[in-house]
Amino acid sequence: MDRRGADLEGEIVLPPAPADRPAEKLPALKHVIVLLRALFCAPLLTSATLLAAAAPTLDLGARLQPAPLAARFSDPAWHIWCGAPIRGDDGKYHLLYSRWPAAVGFAPGWALHSEIAYAVADQPLGPYRFVHVALPKRGVNPATGKKFWDADVTHNPNVLRHPNGKFYLFYMGNHGDGKDYPLHRNHQRVGVAVAASPAGPWQRFDQPIVDVSPDPTAFDSLCVTNPAAAVRPDGGILLLYKAVQIIAGKPMGGNVRFGAALAAAPEGPYVKTPGRIFEPESPGAAAHWMIAEDPFVWFSARDGQRYYAVARDVVGQFTGAKGGLALFQSDDGLRWRAADHAKVLGAKFTWTDGSASQTQIERPALLFDATGQPIALFGATDGYRKDGLTSFNVHLPLRPAAASAPTR
Image (tube, rainbow, N blue to C red):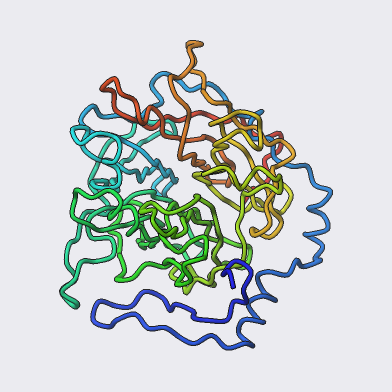
């Protein structure tokens, strides 16, 4: 049976093992699965849930402002992508981002040479200053004599602060020979690193937290990537991820789709949930190679006691703006729909001098202030250009919300 419609009986992957002990797997018991479903999948008719139905929904697009000309993070020697901003206890603004040498080209350079680096700024919109590489190459695991799962590439950073006080960096890693794009791309897996500060140092683990499904007919049987994590109201983690299915005779597999996994703690173990998300019911949806991409997800206590996600509207299915940014909402993090105010941004953004961007924004991420209010939308742009320019991160300010109650 297709994994998407199957029961969750099978294997639960334990948290990443220490370097001196291989990862183990635990046979899932039926009563454990029932408990997980009861905790995570069934909607609860609490007073907060009932109030959420009547609460006004977020209109992020109405708050988005043009980007100041200086609100960009670029380096002519590097392609810069995937900006993940977060405010630290020091009052500074920290940025985890992907970069790879401009000399190797944008694509497939990202899949062969990317590393996650760290920058810092005194103000939300910068200027950001490079400090060091946060997750560098790490080669061979001395305990096994084989390459680490993320030995050669780290990419797609997504950072959050957990109520336990620690910072968690979710990311994609891969390994390969530095030349073969399908080899690296199909080795993509999702991992997490932990630190006491966004400046690091980051503790990495020997195993990914989300791996491919063993069923070749599952939508996530070839590779998993692009993690987007949010802290649930109970302190657990909702993790959204991008995936590709194995298709016989096609090295790059089938369509690109999104799924979700849940964990009681950031380190895991993560349990995949049945079904796919960000996929409309329309008959033509299955014909598209990719419908949505690059979600950034969070739970908002202010805006309806629900989850929101900003994602790229690849074919204009949700906003009518092909390549723009769409807002989604969900009461449980598993069943998603386009938000009441779905359009966040069209295919291009505006600078404060009135000029329009050359390309769309990808990899959106929100920066929150000390009260949990979103104050800026970060994104990557100018990728895939053929004119010798390098990609960079841009930071668009958000107008304050009408009220000032905590949001997350």
